[in-house]
Image (cartoon, rainbow, N blue to C red; front, side, top):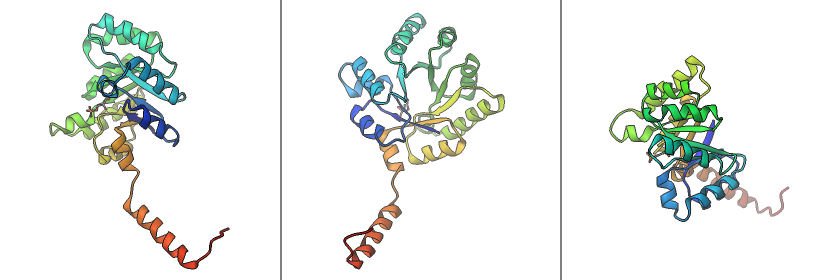
Length: 219
Ligand code: G3P
């Protein structure tokens, strides 16, 4: 189960890269706009922070021929880049070509199981179903994710399922239980998922009991 941070916040990525549980980062144009500065530099810096990880970087062009060229340019920025291309039928032909060129792809803005099926047939590395944007309009995003994961399993596709647009710790938990290959988390959701008041309470109790002994050297 891979865990990616859904951000382009370089400082947060640096902080969490040291901790050992993060497998990569997913950026998108909104994240890079928020990060400010030169997006090429930001992307390169993220790629160098997590050299052994997978860094998703999205195309920003619209016309298929421009997206194709930009995808190649993005892929050339670093060896650990996955190019994010939106799941639209106008891009099928270029997705097929990019797969043939061994460019690693993470297909974004996936909202239906059948969209995911088509991408798996094209042989992409990842599909990113957007859980939260379905939940926002009162449609069960987790159910959609579960169906996509089921399709990959029953037909034996190599395409990995990357749960995206995760808004809550519950969505994260459900994605893990479904058995997705990966999940990308906003830093706030990731950090919240690591906490338990019972752990804090337990540490405080052990510390208090230990202090009562008055021992300063142990072992
Ligand atoms: O990068 C894709 C993604 O996770 C977007 O999330 O919260 O904008 O729906 P959100």
